[in-house]
Length: 288
Image (cartoon, rainbow, N blue to C red; front, side):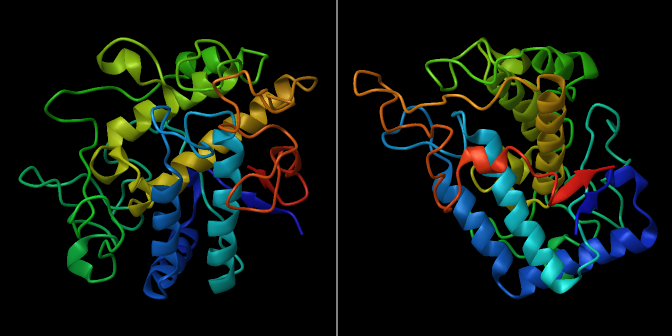
């Protein structure tokens, strides 16, 4: 049965409560920390050798689509009514509006150490201690809007800039490409400051704290952010129905991306699934 992912700003009080309860339960079971570790393990940058699947590569969108599905399956084993809501950061742009409410994700961190002290994911509740991390921090941190050097969330215009590009991705299939929908959405830019962080990447910077690195999954907003990124991919697919995931074939042995990126029909580690199989999810879920 096809289920629906909703805009977080439209959730009822009951839907918010059930989502939070399911998240806390998979954390209690130890399942949630496995998701954090998986993202850390697959956060491979251009400068590193070997295969890149989660970031700075064509499979950025497909990898996170499957990652979201896995999280959603875990949540729905706890409560079959729960789906991952999406946060439309082009519309809900404040630091106190959804999803930053006390009954959902809580707010920004305190000025002294950026520790989140409000909401169900605050360290003081005893329910959200960080166990998988790239630092020794044990509490969730945020710096919404980056108080010391403010930045703004991406705008509808900036997102439209990515959506207009009919080509999914281009050579050299990494963070340096300046054309193609994938990197315009993922957001690796050039220059300094906000200009070097576009769309998806800018949101991670705007949230700050745990969202700044490979352990960003420690902040539950990671999933709401990536649900919206996934929705944007669905919109791009609807707008450009004749264009598909690229590369269609693996780069040859003469390419610097040889065996470093996943082509359309290749398996996408760590799963037994291909980007081709993840392009159409209409039989699994839809967006409201």
